Length: 248
Image 1 (cartoon, rainbow, N blue to C red):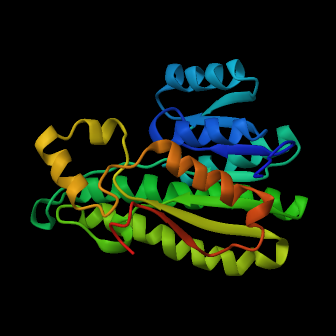
Image 2 (cartoon, rainbow, N blue to C red; image 1 turned 120 degrees about the horizontal axis):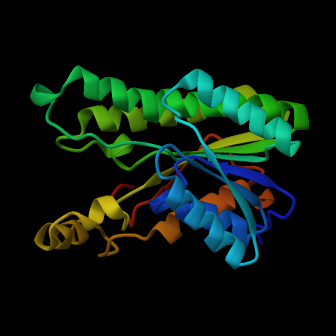
């Protein structure tokens, strides 16, 4: 199941955390994976080496999704060079926390540029290519915070909620072209970000999750592999919640 042999996939922000797990999962299913990075070239190359070491194929592609025009152009050029682009996982994102009264406009601009405009730019380039090849999969990595909100994350939650509106709209726009558009909304996942949380706070977080633990990047990646596959051909406009039951 979930065989992706012969498919080309681009994972933005694929050099670490959830992005890396998704890149490796898609490669294990047979896809040729392009690992996007903005600053972490060495880490991106480590992902490619791990994929190749496991018998898969991959390459790196550096560009900043925050520039919507550049993102669109880079994705379009990639699709042209590879001959097609079957899967886009728009995972690149930033998290800048702060209470509303302390929120800086520059921080809001940065969040929207990366999390929203970046996703739109990549999607625009990918959809153009997918229309030509008569099908494709677009997957946005949103967040449980975009659905339920969280104290101190108003702007971040807004950017992640925007991805859900984008998902539903694009799903309607391109369903007739056999392009499915879905989102994944991870809960608290073991990443560099959550590792920085002190242990007492981590334990309290786990208690608030019905399954009683923080999730893994591999579990989010499994959801992405499903949505990218032929088995998900009749799934579009959906937000797949990978959150341990903390929001249902």
